[in-house]
Image 1 (cartoon, rainbow, N blue to C red):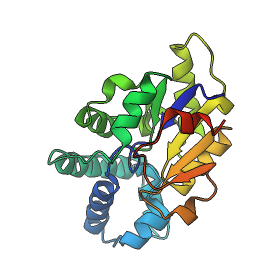
Image 2: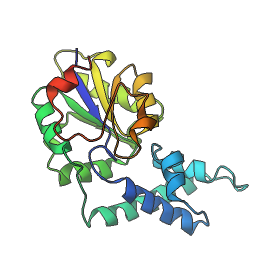
Image 3: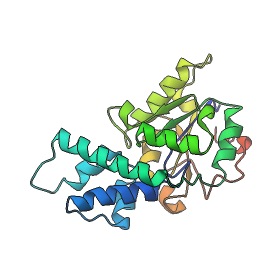
Length: 224
């Protein structure tokens, strides 16, 4: 039985993956590393900022210090903020689904983005009041593909929910392969939306849709 829904943010709620790719590419270019679109979607999309920078520098002889990583995360965040201030595009159908689902189930966000970035997205879409919890990259020791973000989101949901929700009663809505695997590692079911990858690359999900437009609560409940 479905009892809670956890949304990813970038690529599910808003069309922000190009923003993160541009900001990451800008920081890496300043460090003498070229980031291609193909590499971003193949290797970086589901990682948090720390994971992205560690991956980008993995083959360099000079190892990054924690201070180096934190400085680059901060630099990227400033670039993301500047681009987001110019406008955030909420993806088709998602605001309607979130508002509808919030009337039936507790909702949370579990994302590898920074909290300030997630809050900018939900504020832009007028969706902040719909979520019981937000889990960002700062809130867990390990981000996707590990299950930590989803398990933390469920923990926070249960702090405010009279009826305790078990992992197998949660539906995760994701757009990435790492996100699907993290959801399954958390023993949760996963609906994947083909906003960032073609449907065939998301086949590990329990169900795959082209978009969230017109998706009903009954359709979500039929996954359980």
